[in-house]
Length: 408
Image (cartoon, rainbow, N blue to C red; front, side):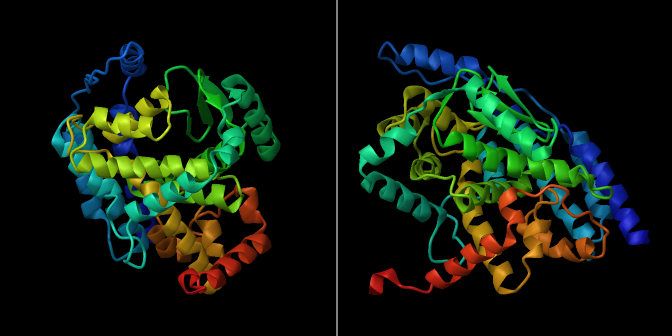
């Protein structure tokens, strides 16, 4: 093994050990009791601002280790650049966790995930513009067209059985277990070996395929492939710097398989608009009202609003901006796939599943996949294995974008 590869592999192992305790979403999440208290008061006609107590965390020693690892990386080498950027992102995440509940947490979230008014590729439009477009389209549709697909008809146990059957058929054995979790606020979450469903939630007919494509065949699958990497085990970790690409890839998977519906696009877009409102001064109760007025139930409105205010003050002017990455990431990933097709480099799209990476990472590390330094993905989602169909859809997209609807 070349000295530079061995050096950075050793640094990567140290980074994995150092960053293991930096779990942004779990440490910033709210306890289920907060939702229960709010909804019980709301049911009798009152609204009360939640009171959230966050743990007091100190990552001084961890950040010192990360700084040393980053300083030892050769940023002129592809692996060194990857490790240098990764240690900086983990440091930012550690600072966010150290500042939970304070205005500083919002600044760190923006540094990690960006703002909803950030420009999209091309520079003319922002993520907020995209969100408002999808909200408008959804609101213009006949509500009767959405009623059946939006109605939650499946209980969690039924969906658990269906998804477990799907995953066991795909992997050929029990690799990813579908579990019920009564302590979740979100309806679903995925790790390498577990896909969790909130046990008291109900799901629509779209949720099965969406969860399969989004959670299992992107989030779980890239974590599993990352664990197959002998030299770069950090590719299995959910680093905040990869969130935009991960969520964009997951929503792209829903889109390319026809699993996404306009109702889901509206829900994603409402969260982005809510983040913008919170940054502009809306407090938790105003953001809750925004979701509720948009047609969400009280429970769903609370869950949506708490996503906006995780880890930050509830009084307005601050936001946890992670949900801004969904549409920006979708557009970034869609653009990446189209560019790969135009440049006859579709193998880059497969390499994107070899672990949790940014789009810049996969471009930078591509020579290391090509020469065998990094392992190719063991698992690929079914839609990516059908390269001809994917290429056909992307080719049509490339041409359709040249047609100016405003000139028709």
